[in-house]
Picture (cartoon, rainbow, N blue to C red):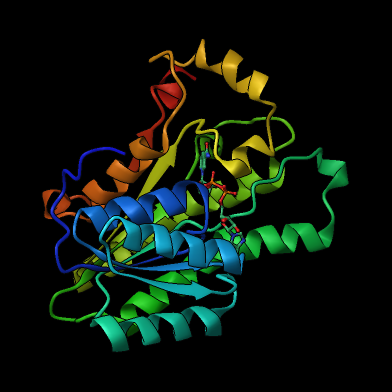
Length: 254
Ligand SMILES: NC(=O)c1ccc[n+]([C@@H]2O[C@H](COP(=O)([O-])OP(=O)(O)OC[C@H]3O[C@@H](n4cnc5c(N)ncnc54)[C@H](O)[C@@H]3O)[C@@H](O)[C@H]2O)c1
């Protein structure tokens, strides 16, 4: 785990999809930087386990098992978190279903679910922050983009559509909510072999890919966690509408 290099003391942060992978790692790291974290995940036991992992490193964590695509559920968990910990400072919209398949195999129910979890849920995350933050103080949102948003990777139509939407939504929200002191940015991680990502690609694909990434290694969860912590921290107080590539140069190299 990377050293806690950002000062997030006193911040209350809700993270969706925090039961495993990048969300879980970010929750632990943000807590190590001093934030009080609320962890959401649709996988209830993973959600509880991740909250316990935060507590194990001395952090304060609340577990909210539930569906991040359910607006009422997200509003409810944010309100409960605020009632227990105080006004929210930030939301990390991280939940997503990682799934690739040829376009002719994309079924309506799967597409609807991916759009709901990946693209609609950040709307509910933003609404939950606005309803539960201190309006004088403002807040911050970090969305999760991907290098696929800007390139045509075959067989990723649903996933890439979501991530392209995330880039647009991040920019719109940064312009719309900036005057209300809410900064909205995205992290665009590249090739981190999380449980979800390993369901997309064989480990051998990752081994091969690590040789073509300009920095000649795969992404690590810490890389992403530190980028999120930076974007939430006072060090990023004038950064708004940024899509921060954390990918070893994948996006730049094409
Ligand atoms: N791993 C990578 O290389 C990579 C690259 C680019 C972007 N991302 C993005 O980072 C984020 C995290 O990805 P990951 O690699 O950790 O994936 P992951 O599949 O390992 O973790 C995703 C988590 O989201 C949860 N989730 C799914 N549907 C949910 C719902 N309806 N409500 C609440 N939680 C739900 C899952 O249960 C899981 O715990 C995603 O937005 C993903 O698109 C990852």
